[in-house]
Image 1 (cartoon, rainbow, N blue to C red):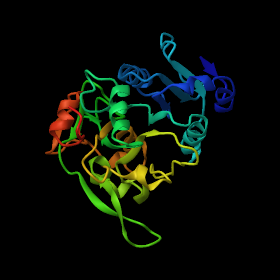
Image 2: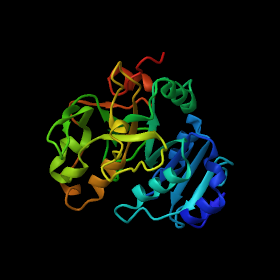
Image 3: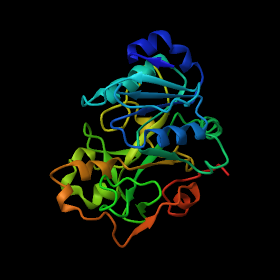
Image 4: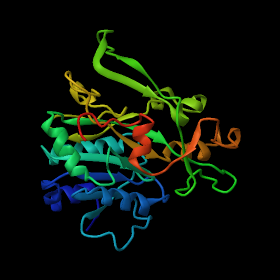
Length: 288
């Protein structure tokens, strides 16, 4: 289905949100739209909302689970405002959001659907899941000028760290919350605004009335921002993303300073959850 605006979708197509999980893919440019769509359909989402400008093409054989919505990601808070509107329209439904050229990976995703994972997560009394944005980049920037190549994708195998998250109102450390850093945002931090250097994102969550997604990819409900429940470790997932690499190569202030993203800790991305589990970038918790 195709909708002229988010307003139109929420008025005419709201029934799509009756059953989850629902994915929202925000399209910023014309890079890897089809592969992003195929990947998330393969995860087993009940519906995939593709919010994108009319100028970009969507594969004609996308299928009945895909709903195209005319949308401009340009305004600074546009994506967050859109997610919050969908939250209001889909109480109790598990939602997910990402951008084009980003790919969700969770433990055992090759054999288990995202719905199965979220059913288990719900049984553990969790309403949100921490995801790490793991930067991907092509190994040869002379060949791939925008640093995007599915076949030649690399990631950093180390260089990730976490700092305690402080409540600005009290100055105290927040319980079970950390700010995570690493990847290209860490290695090229001089080109990245301080507010965009974190790699944690609460990308999977159950919509609740009044809960707001904030511009730093956290939620107004502080329990949503925790990495685990108080009694044991929980599942975490990763969003493997070319977004930072694209931005660094498109930005005139950084592109000429970067001949290659590769360094001694670069390794080829194998496009499976086992590699991410072995690197400690996702956590299976109690799910086996």
